Image (tube, rainbow, N blue to C red; front, side, top):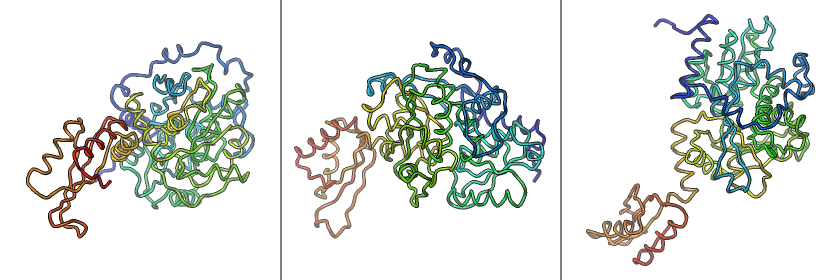
Length: 463
């Protein structure tokens, strides 16, 4: 079979741009984001322009202090590469919190997440010799796509290691952006080890997803955009995995607006920052259990940890139910397709709305969600919001018994999604049948109404 993989820098860039349009999809692929809408959001002077500037390039030392000047240099590098993503108001969340809430839509960024910012800055600053050797990365999705596109735009060969179980749409997108994809390992830690070994063997430059100052400086440009678009902001809420995004945003924001709070959010099942902050140093956690693969990291990065420890005001955790509810809210109320990690700031707002000082900007960090996961998460989110109800009841095994039960549910306007029968079970009497019913309801109050109607009709609900 002929190999049609793009090889020249021009071919790589054309393939990357085609893939970028395909992943963003629909009208967005054909129509640029309205920059005038962003300009209308700003009612104050530009904090970037007002602050002193530096023409010095970002320091080569990957662990030296990162400053707002480094973020400004990254901002220049990203001109014409990353998008100034829109800031959208949320009436529902604003009413819940009691002050204006804005959503920073990085799910509409190129490659569907903020990762292009840091990846491009990191690769753009490589020497000609390093570029000639190519780059290698490891990721379950977003970083992979960011590195692939950034490398293609810069004419650099890229190899990306992904877990064997990575969602197929993310694998396909990474290849479309121009990278050679190698599937290795079952978890990201195994994939990272494989990528680092490849770098040692080939001389390719390893592009870490968060533990490098150029990556952090690139992600920090998002913080500059927020201050431009919402100069009255009082709190910025951002998801945390390894810490690169939160660290970059904190560097930019605290230098220009030290009064603004920066709050990080982690999934409770993969929260490495709370114990690390308590210990005063990065601590690895053994168990990682969350649907939010974008922030599913077992140990903070050394470089971002120091910044988060110093500049981020607070790190909170959210449950899987809260993540599901937040994803559902983003889809239904904000009309934004967001992955679980990207919905984590919204989950924090839903969890404790009274604890946020507004105006608040919640960063929707990515929208690369696998359709199958989206289907499961939405069902989970609807269940968490009281929109699904699962019941088990025992009926007399006679003709018409099920129809009578369904008649009761019809009266209370509950939509039956699925019905299951169990007849052969030692727990059941000779003339009994157990019925499991999945219902779509209108919320917690409607669930209570359904239960009461069944009890009044003489049915005993097992669960």
